[in-house]
Image 1 (cartoon, rainbow, N blue to C red):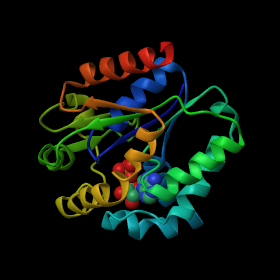
Image 2: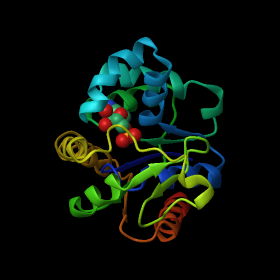
Image 3: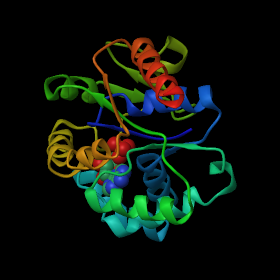
Image 4: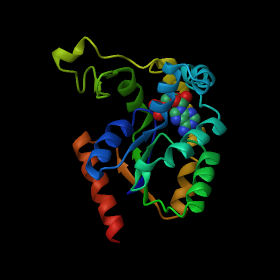
Length: 213
Ligand code: AMP
């Protein structure tokens, strides 16, 4: 299974990607996680990406494209992968398309997790994650258990101001990627407002149907 998860910030891509990776036995490649790790490790890439990320801006295409192409070349991607948070711009989609075509690796599907803007701010400003396991919680909708509550952290770019910038970027830069995949017959839309279990069932159902069809 080679797939891309697309959706606005807070749509549930990370939550679903983790479950899908376990279900299909393939790596979850989150460009946001990779960039946060690069920032934390203080690598050259991390130093360049930090300011963009804090402001809710996109990191320049050339940096992100090189990072993803290198990652897809690693042996654990041979049987498949889930890309989460990439491509986020039309040039990223085109660069990925060229790289996959060169390697003769066809994509199976692009899943859009659809959530209206009104729901996003609430979801993201309440988002917390467990630094030890990566599990994502929400202070009201899915609170962490008491033994974990003390150690959960909030992302630096999950403030209301940065979230507004990220939503605007999503509409301006990422939505134009959708027709690119729709034209290829790869786009699957699921309702992201449903319970995470239902979203997961909708995604796997659609992917299995697409593979049979
Ligand atoms: P995410 O965890 O996917 O919400 O990403 C967090 C931040 O990392 C974004 O707001 C961007 O600053 C940066 N980022 C992640 N993926 C990309 C990408 N494909 N292109 C550019 N910037 C990205």
